[in-house]
Image (cartoon, rainbow, N blue to C red; front, side):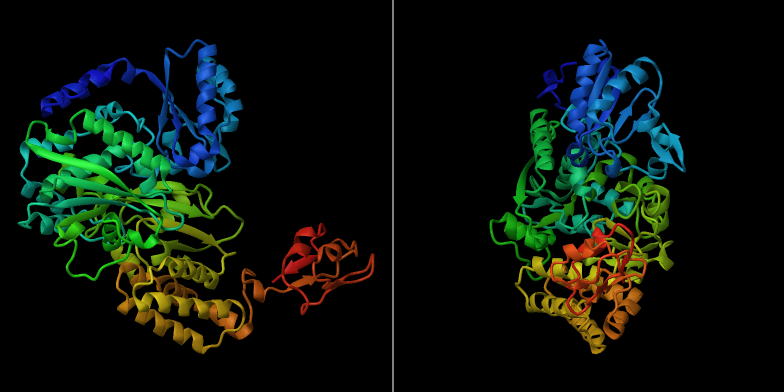
Length: 620
């Protein structure tokens, strides 16, 4: 159907309902579909070539008029993309290549035979249905309800799924106070990291008497390994627009900005398409639904500074200045963008709002824990069999994410820890695998929920090196405005570097803890205040590894280069392959006789280990 004829005619809530019903009854929305993931990860793996192959093969088979190819947002299991779902029987195919498409069309779509070599194995058995795969059936997709089901560049798809009904409900039957009350009753907490109650923040701004207010969306996702916000922007951008419009009405704002890092070109492109479509249909702009409410929305690009994820630094950046944090109070709800009352929430928070309004605050609060309601999205990465985007109720045990959803550890080693909350977070060791993933439980272990980055590590990870990695990250990303963060993190990194080099002293552990306390308590913004968390949590749960590095000059995982020792075993047959590749001539021995390594000359490059074909060289 030609949805363009509905542009500019959504003058009231009844028009929206009529359009939704019309779409649901149309031939287009009742046709059989082939869902192809067009999220950033699958596109990088070649999903657009797969799509082109489907277009060609369906045309050749004269099926192009009976099957619709739908490009969707991220379906979740990024590690096994490109992924394709055959809608009529819910068949899930993984790692699909363009050359596989002819077989899918001829054997499956025409012949009715499932292609087993493209199915995902579960316990050595092939499972065909997407709904029966543990990765999907152990999730509760609320915020991600549309990702993988709609084309994010078509507003009709969003409307057909009930999109903008929450906005029409708010504008035609609720007051701003009632909206804030529903959000408060829901118990929704900000998903950007701090977990501040959303309703409380909105109410502060709503009560302000200032006639000019702003609402901002933080899409400056900077945590290593995190891609939750990016995937929502790529897969369901209208949910952010609708959530922000509802928030603007609630606080009395007519202007909003989405602050997106420039490294997200696909997310920016799809969000701009969605904004343009919403304007064309009168869903944002002037006199929305004929209620007199006006709301304009624009995108502002960030240049990749991690500190701009902090709300006051983000605000400063939108104003055209260098992204640096400001002292608080005053808080943004009182004096934010251009010194006007401002509400800032992240992408996931705003995507919850339409769902919350449609359900009602009380029903929304039925999911989650007593103090943390709703679901949480995590970017599951690291040494798990299936990494990707997952959504579970707040309070779900970490073990369920790692084993039931992620499929367990991908190597032949055991689980060691999970870094949660990004550079500002902490690690969860094996003895706490059953910790509920909620704000309070994680804080007790010295970690934070953060925005939802979750990196799983096996026994091959050195926790001192992990702390060094995140310290290096936050030190590089420090804006330098305040001394505790600028100098404190640099000093902490120097100490950890020295420990990893085998030059540490036992007093360094006390020094790290004292520095961590100073940086935490004296830094200006959240970046500095949480920067010591990776060091503190690794000291708390893996202190023995620090002691081994200092006292024994040993890295148990052989990760810290300066502490590695290479040794040639007696079974060496004297082939001299290792001797030939050694760049410093540290290996000696006659041909056909066992060789030795001069450890004083060895620069630990590892070339000997990778060259030996007889497993006669070990490192420890």
